[in-house]
Amino acid sequence: MRIIETYKSIQGEGTMAGELTMFVRCSGCNIRCSWCDTVFSWDTQSGKMSKDMTVYEILQVCLDAGVKNVCITGGEPVLQKDLGELTILLKSRGFFVSVFTNGTLPLNNIFAVDNWVADYKLKSAKAEIPFRKENFLFLRNCDEIKFVVSSDEDLEEAKEVMSNAVTNAKFLISPCLDGKVDFEKAKKIAEKIIKENLKVRYSLQLHTVLWGSKRGV
Image (cartoon, rainbow, N blue to C red):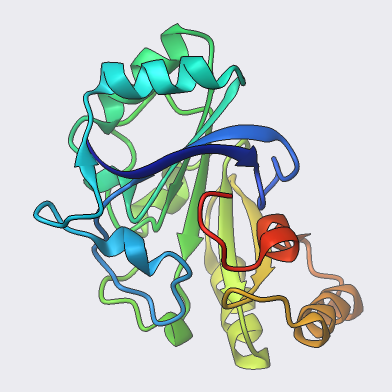
């Protein structure tokens, strides 16, 4: 697999926010979002920032970390052909496995995942490929669909998607922080959720609050 970085930190977002986690960041992305906070992960197969690792090498790094949670993220990890093998291997050694994805690729052929977090790209992200509708049906009640929101227009679009989606997954609203916390914007989005009684989880990126745009956290 092509890997940009591995590191231990607290999970910064989603329903597992605050939990000690080993992160495995895969190289390569297929959509190039306008507000991406991990542009360095767009590195390609020929890029100099990433390196090839076998699933067994990745397993050993996770074992050495001494934590039970592993988050496989990117870039887009589903682009990695050995992702399924890695998740099976990690599960066989007792890890809780989360995979963060943009949801543009089929997810139903990767089974050993405890928690999918699918990041639905709104129009403001200017993603090159849309969310795969079949993934709504595949996602379970232990999974999450996240909307990164930067404006009232984003929130209105997210509400429309949620009202039309047939899925068992939980919905998350995450303020777009762009590497730093704009507390006024974050508060405004939270207040709209409260005012409109939206059935969502508000997810403020803890790692950005604590460390800003620093890598490896």
